[in-house]
Length: 162
Image 1 (cartoon, one colour):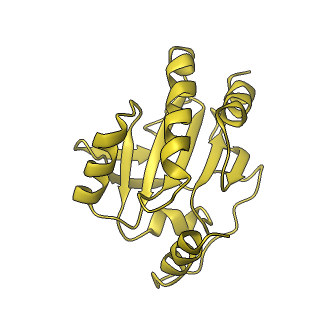
Image 2: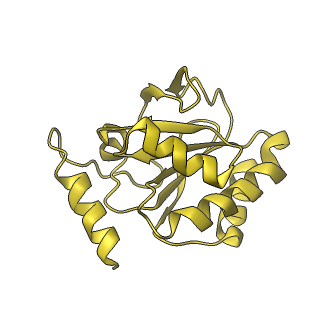
């Protein structure tokens, strides 16, 4: 595990409040309400409204997050017309830091803020990146912790779209 991933785990663990949840395949994805980077609220599950959803937890200090967010964007662009949604939830950073990073990446899917990592805790995130694949009924069908490539995201997305 890289030094930055260890620091991220410690930061997520040090946020206080309720303990990190244990979210398994087949569990309902926890509901949340937060702010979109571009303004306005995002409310899950209503924001996904019966669509398959990729929920990606990330931070700008995560060395794997940048290339993977680009890979997810490629999958999103190919399948958004089929109903695939993506929420990239930043864990623990403020709006200016998130905006600077996303401006550099130019991804096209929605970016959400989780400045105090409360959503990440409800999802059981213990390291970044972490990605959940949620079906149209709001059930977790896949989970990737750590580094993955475009082919992995594609495979999970296609399973959700069946």
